[in-house]
Image (cartoon, rainbow, N blue to C red; front, side):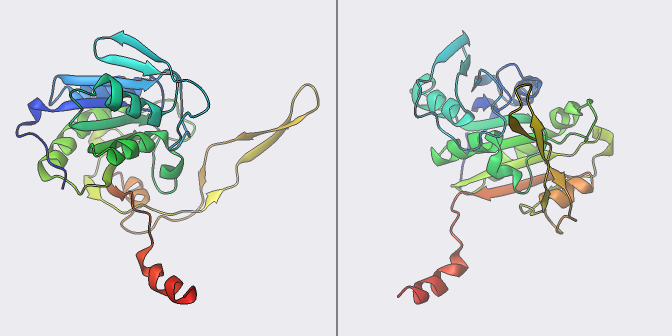
Amino acid sequence: MNSFPSGLGSLRVLLTNDDGIDAPGLKILRRIAAEFTDDIWVCAPDSEQSGAGHSLTLSDPIRLTRHSRRRYSVDGTPTDCVLVAIHRIMQDNPPDLVLSGVNRGANMGEDITYSGTVAAAMEATLLRIPAIALSQQTENGKANIHWKTAETCAPDIIRKLCQAGWPKGTLVNLNFPAVPVEEIEGVEVTTQGTRFIGDNLDERVDPRGRTYFWIGGLQNLSKPGKGTDLAAAAKNRISVTPIHLDFTHRRALKGLREALA
């Protein structure tokens, strides 16, 4: 199990995201972390990296910019940010906890395979640092984002998670529904949902007559399964999903071994 220093006030926390160093969600995340510690470090992409997934920059140099004593940006992916922060910026005194987010938009169901927010938490977990990904669901077609929901509810959830601990090799994925704080219907520990994602690939033609494609917002065209993160959001509940990094489907092992013997 992951364990933490007694008294969360002594936690050293690294913040990152995939929306970029100047994203409003990162400012929210700093205020969330400040509720239980003052040892806060930031290393985030210098521009938006949404949809980057768990990608590394291998063919280009990675450049680090220092904005202040504990605030840095990297011209790379969220995974790059975590690697640089832990192996260089904080190498002499690594963080006790990595918080990634607060993402603009939910990361539920299959979203987590694309998400740079979740990928940053994944990289920290691989480096044996406990990590939590935080995402604020948005309402389709509406500009107003209920950032206050994540800001208000997250500190208490993080405290409880750190007091309880969670297994090594596992990250925690938090999703806050797209409603004001007063409409939240509680917290639910969930499984990762599955859903059919509607085809929203828009084909267009540029001024030179060449075809290009624009990937639109994901359309959820199915009813969420009971007990999943998607079902929790539909009930205005905060979902807390433990994500294990061992992708092995163990029930398939015996049959495959027999077939290939």
